[in-house]
Image (cartoon, rainbow, N blue to C red; front, side, top):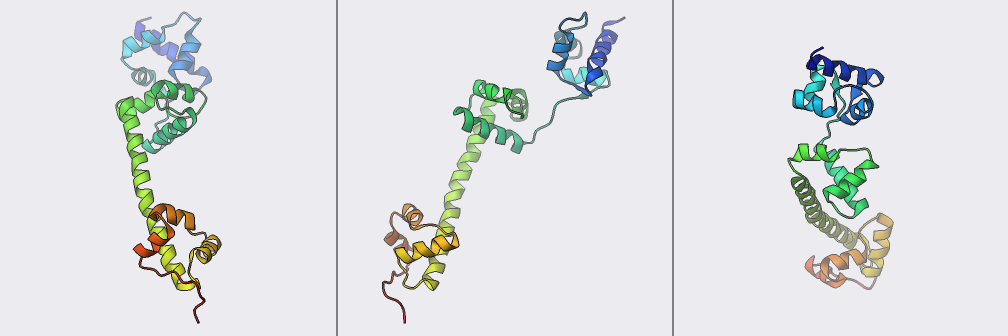
Length: 194
């Protein structure tokens, strides 16, 4: 039997219990058998995918979208505290998701993957304050029309009832409640309008 036929026969035999075949599955299956090793397969075909195609088998790899990969990287970073390839590999052992190889294949390198995630985080945090400011402005303008008297205490009650930004949030965004009103040219009132 020639080398190619031997490899194809081994690959097909290894898939007898599974519809797809991963490198790890093949390595475990071939460990105590007199069959070509994974390295033999790789040297002959140049790639695992090429070997599977030659044997008429489908590749077991799931193809992840960028959104799925970025989601996994964010989750790993939250849980591990660091976003290094070593920490990610440790995290990935216990989680279903893209492997380090999947990430590198998608982005071209680990550092590009990390930079992409960091850039997306920056975009999230720079866009979010503008959205937050618009919500505060809208809430203050609306409250100034319906809350009588209009002040920090009555606004706080109204905001809580309507799920709007609190006085504390307004103060953090503008530096103080009074500064927010001054910037929006709103007047605080203490007495009930008649």
